Length: 64
Image 1 (cartoon, rainbow, N blue to C red):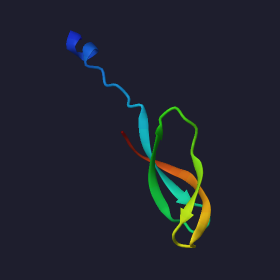
Image 2: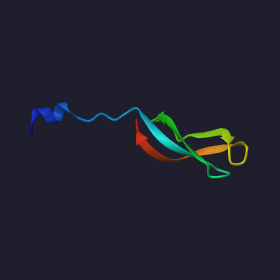
Image 3: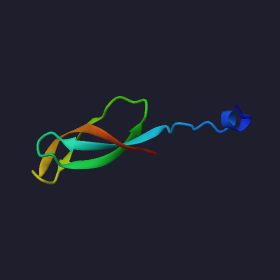
């Protein structure tokens, strides 16, 4: 085993980009959150129904 393998260990990022989906209409957008935080649930304006609705985290898109 080479010493360089130990020193060049890959570090995990602190943030992650997740896809948020509207409970009412299915409209989606991306948001950034911390990796160790709980799943997000927010209230935001939904352009499909022209009202505010609840958005829940659907899936992880990528690490930041």
